[in-house]
Figure (spheres, rainbow over the protein chains, first blue to last red):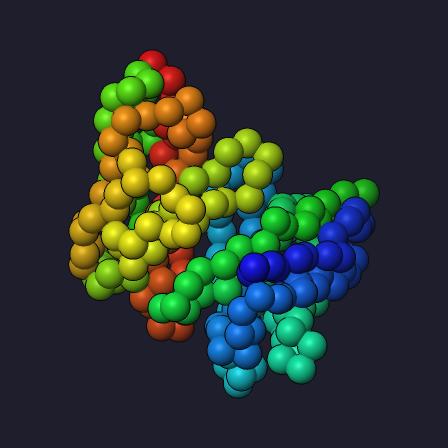
Length: 116
Length: 109
């Protein structure tokens, strides 16, 4: 069955960095555009970043542009999110999401806490 | 950026009754609209995609309708496990900033 498993979350100080990963299985990862979506405590869902199925295009929410970098390795079925210069407002659960007209898949999320 | 607006913010309904949730897009999203259910402490669960197609394992009491800018999620006979927060998401935009509505909290009346 389809699985998306995020890892790499944790507690980091303001200004610090963190790298999230998402391991995909059970579907044709290389055929899917992939996204990161986050949810701050008690808040709604916020789209963060997208990478095209072949990695050729990337887009970011204004709130993370210039600080976050999305990447993928189709040979390893892995999606990544490099987060730099983290702020308190980046505290959230981060979800890995695959979307195509053939289906939509979500991971269970990983918690990132930015605090001194 | 396409803005998604859900109404109402909170809906109070008794078990066994019907619930109707609305989602409006600021510009057309065709039928590229998904609905999610989120219970406390859990990840969003896909209910509906393509505006009206139930995801695998979703009970028939959940149905979606609409196209263009106006969408509806209907839960025909509410069960206790259905009381949760519901989000809509469009996946039609390019660049693919697939925005969400702010959510509707479905609570027990």
